[in-house]
Amino acid sequence: MMIKINLEKIKKLVEKYGDSSLIEEFSCIEKSVQKEIPKIVYIQLWMYTGCPTCDYTLSTHYGDGYHAIENEIDRCPRCGQLLEWE
Image (cartoon, rainbow, N blue to C red; front, side):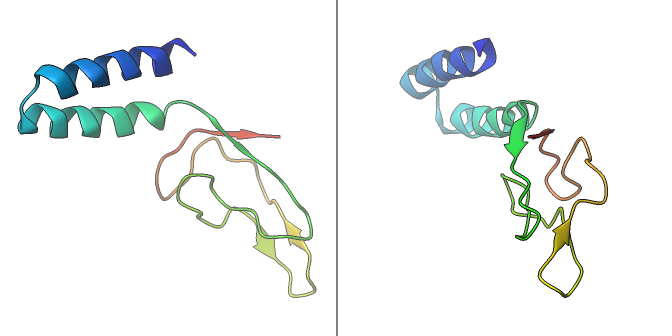
């Protein structure tokens, strides 16, 4: 993916030529951009399903061992990660 390649190139330049404040600023930007790249959520009906970034609970447990997905949301409500459902 071009975004990841470009981020890596910029990161190397920032680390090589930037000062600590620029490196810190780039780190914040990188985290924000990474959340715009969808991560796959693997659904396992008899197991807990969580956000691949922060592990926020995306499934509902019914007490009998069964976990269900009520709705396939686009973003994690906790961390904002863009989600792609398998």
